[in-house]
Image (tube, rainbow, N blue to C red):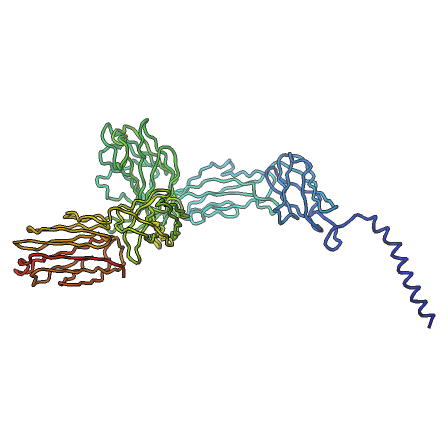
Length: 602
């Protein structure tokens, strides 16, 4: 029994002796901090990068954070991808030379020698010579063969900024797909180890296939479209001295000789050769250069297409409007592109004495777009000052309107400006109201969402005009207000007080008919609401009146009347209530009447 025990003890002593011999030698080896004893390694010992380009390096075997540095930042800089991804870094070439990139993790460091060389350049040629920066194609299916070379012999990749206008093959053959437009064709390095910073581009303009030069004709009627693919001009005071079209460039000069310069129009009618489809939506972009004489302060003009308006200013600008090709004035011809110069719309007196101006248009491009819904704005109100935020694209919103409600009843609306005091002079209800901010679209690109409304916000209205005497008005009153009109010696008094109208009539003698109360609604097409009337008539036998809205007529009776209405024809249709309707001799015997009116949402 003792012999086996002695053998076990001997074996244990041998193991311990072996460990004592091995451990000192292990302590002398290079320390490796990898998660499983893995050595810190660089993805490549050397690398090459262009000036201005980037090279990606990475390390493996890091046991903790990795720091990166360059021994010569004047040649190359290095930065980790992010604070969370420090095992990879970008090296950026600064100038020609060599730099050592060092990655350190714990006690271990590894390096990569990076050589920075001159940046790659791409050259585009046409017919063996350097290609011009602007190339003209006559029309659809026209082609041009381009070639490109890399200063470093790399392969070339071609791309078109809009393949719906023009395509480019892998060999550089450019083919016009549309009939009119401008596209950018780019040649760039196709090598997988290059960042793609090397590239060159040319502009390709596609013609419509019509005459490249002509004098722009004068149109006697401003509502008459020019011929397809042509420009025309119209001037209210015949102040256009010259107007020409030359190879895609429109030039027009004005001289008014002391008369007003107003309502001078340039018009263009797209042609089928441009590929526009009736009813589709297109973005029209163009460059305009406007020059005015000294002292002219008014805006130079505006471009309006389908309700979209952009205002032009002196100098050179890039403009964009939205266009829907469809019926126009006579119902048959397509809508034309209309530019108005020298318009008189609250402009300074300079618009009256302009003696010289020029306008040049070029780079007109038609691009099909899809309607984009408006986004609802957000807003707040403090001390009746409104502050709002609208994320919609610039120029897409025509105006912002604050719509106010008392309960479910809309009591008015106010056009507002960000950061401005609310003008509640037309809100004829006092107290704490609910407000919703509405963004109204300025462009038909938002046809599927002509307006967007925010969430509710509380608005406090303290308006001294919540009570007023109804004013005589034989036309249409202002929106949200009441007015009256009488005929045949009827004495009238009418008061509006916090949403209630009280009107009293007295004729004493003679006929009583066609006495009207008028109200211009704040409602929109499709909205429904109720109007309630209480009528007390002295001596009436015939119906005391009728109410008309959106072409519908309802007869009124003495006592309480409740009529459900719906706006069907247009924003703010006027409500006309006619009392003392002339329908027989009995209507002449009415001596007096009192009417009380209230309105509420359904």
